Length: 372
Length: 146
Image (cartoon, rainbow over all chains, first blue to last red; front, side):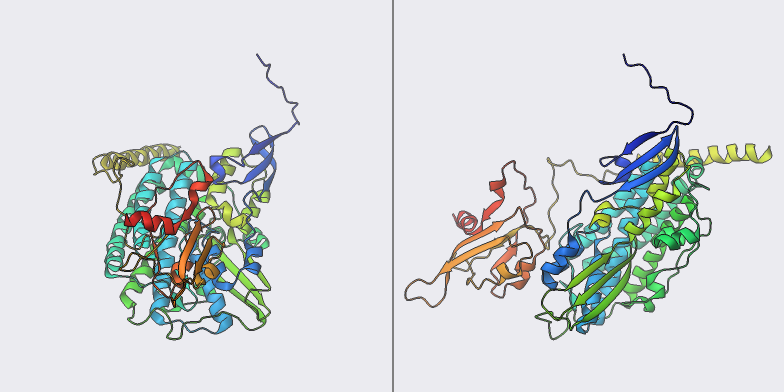
């Protein structure tokens, strides 16, 4: 039998979390220097599923690359495609019919709710509660069924096109979406009673992992990470795009800066997304979903273009440098989780390992989106 | 001291509320399906791998224009055709879909102007051999017509 290793009082050891570990939600590796239960130094190691999306963007034509965007983030795919189509439309001056814009907004918000539901389930599972995941997945399944009925796929949608949409929504979708909203509101109440009020859950998050506004700004954090630290920034409000100015919704901001604040922001965001979907369905105009003159060959004039959108994980930016050719000269993808994740190294110093893993869950990391 | 005990009291209540919710869920109807013994029907717009569409004579609608080959982002389509003597149109001789590289984006179906391609509803695709995913769509069409 092996004899136990005795550490000197000031001796540290290295703990390797991942790359295959359930708590990291993907292939993320965290190298932690530990002093007993406490983290002295942590280093996130990424790049295990790097797929060269930016390079592919330079090699493929614009319509061919459109399919890649939904492969970046498998939980909130539509938000990323939205950014890309908006950018190319801005660059090439393509007019989008109003109906298409409304449908896009409804779809993106549905996708955001689905993404937050999955995060909610996985986050609570990280903290040791299994049943909320099952309830969240059951609700999420309704959204996936709706989206599948329209787009034809459940996760990696290829639904948006330059100038409009792949196909129109039908009455089944509209009635299903209308049925879903009250159902989801009822479920939210259930989640708040089951999880938010739970004493064990609160004790594990309240006052844990405080992130100062300064740190959020330094790392370029966005989404619930920044909004949980009192930074009122949402691209949908601050740099309005698409038809978002038409909708009446609030940006939830919490000032507690802890993990619970980040949780509260996301739960409130689900409610706000439901409000947007409701208004979108009410206002949905009739008309075409593609412009009369379909853009055949996409060749944006030479120049530098940028478009930011608010995805489920934060502010996603996409920059295009065009030389007027069929393929971009350079395509830069600014993924929000990449910035959010890098907070982890600095913020988790001195934290206990279980708190650090709860903190990591509150950041809502999707690894393929970091590596891209 | 008072806050200590009130926290324990409220904490205990919150745990019982949670248990009551999970207990109620226990009596709700089952929503899952015992796959593979039961399966769900795929929706009309489900995007599986592509299939050729035939005309009334059972021949493919394809005119070998090669637009789908050009539209494919991953280069998984290889097709060839020939012009038989005395005929005006080209006739499809091979249509190979390399499904190992296909990401089911549907660009090929969208680019087709001759109503020659459609999505299949097949989703139970699993094999231990790579060759099983190199689909000869022309052969599949012939087998379907048998």
